[in-house]
Amino acid sequence: QVQLQESGPGLVKPSQTLSLTCTVSGGSITTNYYYWSWIRQSPGKGLEWMGAIDYEGSNYASPSLKSRTSISRDTSKNQFSLQLSSVTPEDTAVYYCARGIIGSSWPQRREYDYWGQGTQVTVSS
Image 1 (cartoon, rainbow, N blue to C red):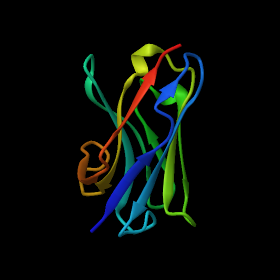
Image 2 (cartoon, rainbow, N blue to C red):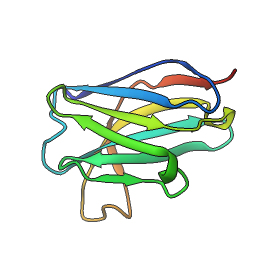
Image 3 (cartoon, rainbow, N blue to C red):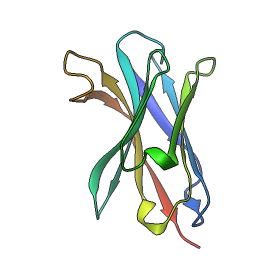
């Protein structure tokens, strides 16, 4: 069974960088035809896809967040990470990592089969 676990600070100050790591077990982040996404959920915007890195290391990002978002991976640790810079209180949300399946409709459509439990991140001074 594939498991994903988010980790990182739960409180970030405005203008700083939010940094989270997703540790994957039960499957490799380099396995063909999967991608690894960051998704967040807030009362104001609901569920919002932020970006992803695929099994080859190629990056994808939401246009609205691309300028502030960086997704990287460490294959030796089977981890991938999110860096969101210049945060504001509007970035307060529950952040999830999830595995996506690269199918024939990728990237126009996205499908996920495993999710982390989510981690609350609050942006506040």
